Length: 92
Image (cartoon, rainbow, N blue to C red; front, side, top):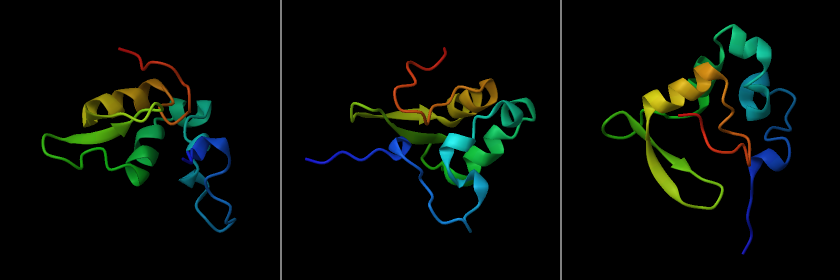
C-alpha cells in the first residue's frame, strides 16, 4: 500500500501556478495578520460543499469526519494550520 501526503514536498512545481496554490504558504504571519488565510482557503477548499454547510475532513490516520464550515473558518482566522501534517489537535 502506498501513502501520499502533499506536505511531504511542494504541491506545485509549475512556476506559472498561483503562489498561493501551495498550502505551505497559506499560514504565514503576514497572511494571518492581514486576514488573507480564509479567502485563500476558500479558493482551494470546498468547505461548504455538503448539506448543512459542511465538508469532509481527512485525518492523517485515514479516517474522515464531517466538519462544519464555521470550524474551518475559525481555524483559518486563528492561524491554525490544519493543512500541516502532524499539526496536532485543532484548537477548541
